[in-house]
Length: 102
Image (cartoon, rainbow, N blue to C red; front, side):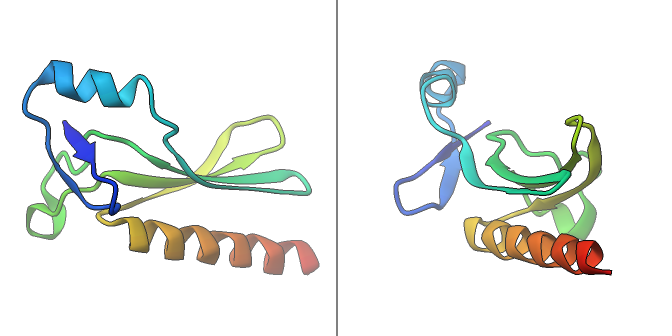
């Protein structure tokens, strides 16, 4: 469990209470883009999703999801930094826009 700092970095939570205090009251949405028949959503997860310690155990704590018009997940990408999550969101939006043009 992690705490998101004001400067968009993160640190391990001291305990469950600290984590819950932030997680339950914060806006975890980093970016949200709605396109025809698609939604691209990027969020702060607060929990490391690198269960198998891929990439040398990098903490994967941000997520971009592409959802269809019914809200079902089409794809997902995880990131270890706020900056990578923003870039990943922008790349997903670009990719979906290109697909919709074709």
